[in-house]
Picture 1 (spheres, helix red, strand yellow):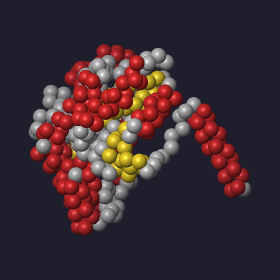
Picture 2: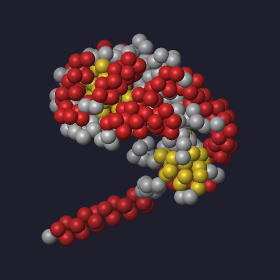
Picture 3: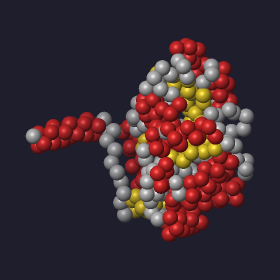
Picture 4: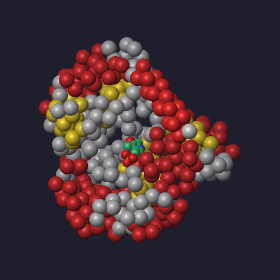
Length: 392
Ligand SMILES: *Cc1c(COP(=O)(O)O)cnc(C)c1O
């Protein structure tokens, strides 16, 4: 009997795989040795990467690595249990206080990853009988959290606060509680949400606002004191990751003290999951030290992205991310292969990560890139731009 189940499952998987392959949507892992912030070794070749989210090069910063190694010596390799049992390593409270201060919030709650944060936070505050209105380009984990919550979920047009207000006007009255969710910097487009307008629409309809700052922290909203803090915008749930500009792993949500206390006692991704490895908290604390001490490092990724958009006559970069939308998946794969042949790694991003017909090279810039790297990339991308719109 087990054999029959095995065969049926294997046949199902094989059929799925060949269908994905026919559509150029099959994804394969490619072992990649990251040598430093921007150089990688892949398939025996050294490449300059424009696909890492390590915007400040902190994954390989000596002080960050030393802090992680030190924490392993002191606290061990793992937390040993969920935080509510014995896994609440003293570094976690220290990091939470630090993140709350950075974001101008009362408190913070750590999560195992950004994916777990959104999947855990959303169902803590809304459920059946409630409403979620999320930007249509929101990250997969926001939709996962929405689905887990059981709340009615509606998408609003990307970065369109008027459409958000219309959706709220239409559906809010049927819901007990409502949550608006968006990203500060969109992960695949690099554009920035009009948070003041979105915040106003949310408040006008008595909806809470969750902002995913995965690609903002440490890159946008620069003033030396508060990278990632949006003055003047009322954000109820300020979520972000430790895995992008901070160069490590883990995530957080900043909010008022009671909101954070409720998360710590009710969010299933906190209650039923092991605490972060202590080394991740130590690395994040060291990364925050670097960010606060080196504003010029924080400013560099957007400056590099701007250098590329100027060179290619594209709309000015708003963040460290620049999309080169090429249309069909095959075209994005072909562009990525040609760049790789020139020693440049720009992984093709295909549906369902991005909408059908908008496969792209998603270029991510780092403080660790030299200006000459950016110029080399611009020349390699230029020939692909001429026909960029042709199959759209
Ligand atoms: C990367 C990302 C996440 C997930 O964060 P991880 O820490 O990598 O799990 C969540 N939201 C957005 C917008 C992201 O880009």
